[in-house]
Image 1 (cartoon, helix red, strand yellow):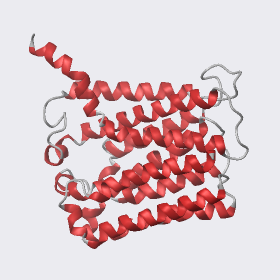
Image 2 (cartoon, one colour; image 1 turned 90 degrees about the vertical axis):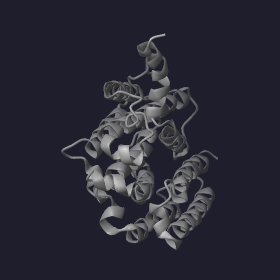
Image 3 (cartoon, helix red, strand yellow; image 1 turned 60 degrees about the horizontal axis):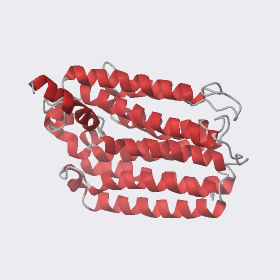
Image 4 (tube, one colour; image 1 turned 90 degrees about the horizontal axis):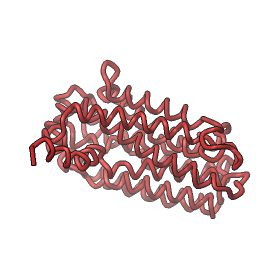
Length: 318
């Protein structure tokens, strides 16, 4: 077997690793949760095959779009990853830059096609023939992911702007896109729910930056820990682990959130308590954030997302 053919056989596994598959679960779940929330929101949707078909297409789209974003970021972070993540496919030399670009373009194209197909308008319409709200949301999200990684914009190097260009597509727009696979996004409720997740990610996304300070500094990325120091940055992001989840209870009281009132209050209390615990872990020894490669707060950030996504779906469907 030639070296070229052997590399080709390894390529699918390399591309899967390059896509960072663990990170693809959260957007797929977020889209599905948004769809479930819309289905259970007032007025509750009557059963039809559309409640399965469009959310399934959409959650696949969300995972593929996130894979494209991950790939683009790794291409432009190559020099940074040589310091922070040297074992990844690109910096280790196991994946060529050409293959990385092909994967990125293909993933973005597939995501946009799938987003176009998420077009519900009732059981009688053919696939892709209804509302295209999801497609335009995904177009906006795609542009923001490009702004995050690609020069001359490259908001990743601009402090809070980096957090904002993560929070909007992966928090706000993801939930609204999920909602659009079932109901129209015209109204306050989907955007309020999206704001909850966006505000969470606005601060929580920084948990990945603490251990990457050396490489980020060499690459010219001025993340919050680099600008303000580890301790101050930890205090700055702490409200994002608490305030968004207080909004759940407040939204239910105000009648903005139309799910099960009791379950929403329970979800608010559970997530707020969880967030306070994560704040405790971060603030008791902030210096550990910059030492441990994956501080426990980073893992809890993902777990909090999973719990909140599942909790919202249950509060609207039960």
